[in-house]
Image (tube, rainbow, N blue to C red; front, side, top):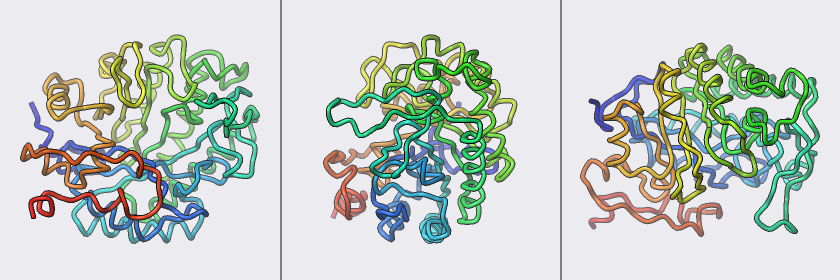
Length: 358
């Protein structure tokens, strides 16, 4: 059985190990969603990951409703990504951009626009009286066409910037997830109702991305079990197994699953994980994510359930996570207070092993 430290081929990407860096929103871009010089060092420090998947990156003005998150729909944004990618490549790393349309979670105080979703259902918020989300309008066929065009354009921009590939964000209650799950998708047209119809937007997005970058440089992240940001499904297996079969037929580079557990730290659910059943219908590389220890990750590789494991929060505080895992060294604890702040604190100042020893 392979070790987490063994190389793996993810489509066109030759990853030196199976310890992937999961996407992590860090809000260090400008108010205009342009990547900053600070991000060069942040991603360069983490280049030893088998593959870096960037923070979620907006495909359009309407799709990016989170302050100071980066975008990739303007020439200025594309140019600002180039030195980040170059720094990762010079450090021997590989980097894939995660493309994001937030759907009903795109805040109008950030976009200046009404959000769109599968249906006109407002997202919940922990403090209802401070809910920053609006009631979205159901996406029209013209909206869907524009969204598909935006994914294609963002994919072209990603390759122009120098990224090694593209991951579509299809998880966590954002636009594609809002179409997949019947807790939000109440449509009665060709994008709603049956599981086949509800996976249609996902499939069409993936087809457009593949047309631009190739299937061997295309991935997607799904969150098939449990409720996330108010998005849920009454029968996850009925929609996510057909979705996985459709992705298998497209021949994508790999599929990443973020799965909740009953004792999860960032979201929890008693809904059974679907990865064992998805493994049966998706034949490409499968990466799993959420609350993994090194030992648990290796167990899932040993069992054949996973081909790679993606870590998120440990990569915030441990830029040299691969080496720390390899040596069995202690991990730096992350500081949640600086997850979404501005500036270098809690971003590029976590020590690597050598610095910690000194």
